[in-house]
Amino acid sequence: MPSWSSKQAKAETTPPPARGRAPRRTPVSRGPRAAVRVLAPLAAGAALACAASGCGSSASATEGVVDWTPAVAAAVANPVAISPLPGTPDASPYTQISFLGSAGTTVLQVSAVGSRSGSHPGSLRAYSTGTGESFLPSRPFTPGEQVTVTASVRSAGHVHGARTTFTIAHQAPIAQKQFPDNPGDPRAIQHYSTAPSLTPSTVTITKPAAAGAAPGYLFLAPYQGLGSAGPMIAEQNGALVWFHPLPAQESATNFSVQQYAGKPVLAWWQGRIVELGFGQGEDVLYNTSYQPVASIRAGNGYRADLHVLRITPEGTAWIDAFDPVQMNLSSVHGSAAGVLTDAIVQEIDIKTGLVMWEWHALGHIAIADSKNPAPDSSYPWDYAHINAVDPGSSGDVLMSFRNIWALEDIDLHSGGLRWRLGGPRSSFKLGPGVQFYWQHDAEFQPGGLISVFDNGSDPPKEKQSRGLLLDPNLHTHEVRLLKQFVNPAKTLLATSQGDTFALPGGDWLLGYGGLPNFTEFSSSGQVLLDGTLGRSVQSFKTLLYPWSGQAPGSPSVLASPGAGGLSVSVSWNGATEVASWRVLAGASPTTMAAVASASKGGFQTTIATPSAGPYVAVQALNGAGTVIGTSATVSG
Image (cartoon, rainbow, N blue to C red; front, side, top):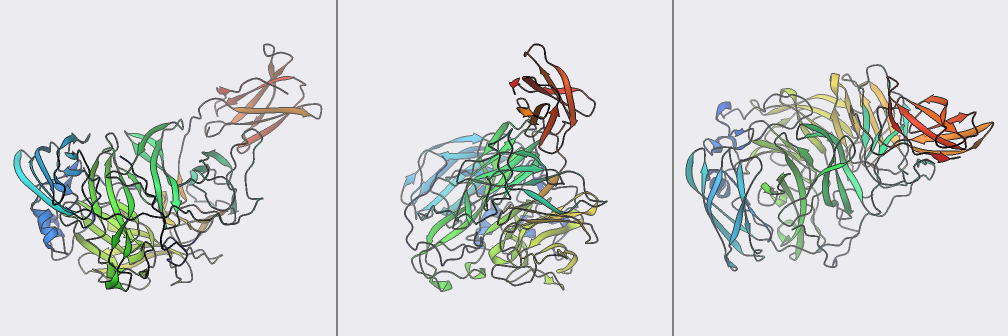
């Protein structure tokens, strides 16, 4: 698969029209972390703060923002965060107007007027979090027009006026061509007689887990190469635990364990990955019984992209979307009739599907800052390419922009920049080894630290991809490199994707994204586990979690004649509590008795029995010897 920086050379210059349409602030982290420190000239207590359930007053909001513009000033003046933010140059024609504040925020009245389309009636719908409402216009706005919104908002017990103005985008049709499949290894596909529909890539462990390796299961979502695409759980020895095959032409990314409604869920994105370098799909949540509990779709006419999925304790989801819009790019040596792919971040209320907050890179990040040269054609230019979002603890959100080589901390109330790490006009002096290129997976860590996966390519700027742990000092405006993780046995330079995942005990797991490799490191950099998917197979991230899954249905069994009896194979997709199997056999379904047993051995276990049956069933036993499931009776 080509780099996700969206190189311009290979695509159609005039793609056919095809666009899909879909009609508080607790930090989200992998562990506890300290609040992010504010810039030295600013008092720490004066930074804009948001309550755990939503943004609060605009008081002191300006003191955390460094890119003071008229649009930011207009946003700061509002009593709550309003989306689209003032000055947004390319809002969707299908946008709702979002009013996000503190607990109890309500909207009393709204006027939305397009400069060409006139007044837009609509309806108000409240967020399930109780922190605001969205105004849903009854008809779309007109491309190219300016929209003026005025409202009365009750927040913190007071009624205030609120206002935003924004411009509606001329959205560009895009080619729906997907990346061609990479050639793979036909030997690197798993096959099971008891589960013939499950054919994912193999997981080969090249260095078994050493003493001190973190416990848990590997979470991958293989695609490309050979084998079916879909979310996959594997043991640390490579044995399959659970696989969910997706339809042809669909892929999964961001497969993880998160919390929703106080319970652990499997979370992932699934959809189509177009050759422009982004996804068109939706995010899904499954419970511990592998049953769907929620779907998360992008709002305002967009389709959810593959890069971002974070669930908050309040039941909201941070996601992203990519939107190609028509734009004159002659100022950056591109086409006057160009197309720019904007990067959009949304916070979605999962229960209602409403957009609570929306932010666009265009209008906040200068197009001249891109490290990806603009094309001289109408091929969509991926100038920023967002690939990570992590809400902070002081009314901020960290974002990673691959094609800017920068991480940005964004103020939630105003949408303005608090600081930039890397890229043009960095807020920090970068210490030795800090500079990164084409990065992914930026995330806040305890103590104000930041982890990031430094791809180092594409095109190559380094010899190896690295996992980095950075210490940004927001008082001296300097960044130190605390840790660097590089595979010592292989030269791994990932041109796309990848992650640096913090594990318990100070270990780190690196997934190399566009490469099939993954490596666990100790805090000191020692390799504790090393493995790979099949040749040319990719997984956007490789993660590791404890997991307990109660598989639905019953075990799958296949019996066939064997030497002196029957050969019985059994599996149960996703059942983590099975410790052993007990085979029942007999001359009739009502006369079966136990004839053999065996410990569970990988995804599928084959047991030789002395009985000729012909009727067979298999019981699944947990570690205490309790039967937790029984297969259907089959004839061998």
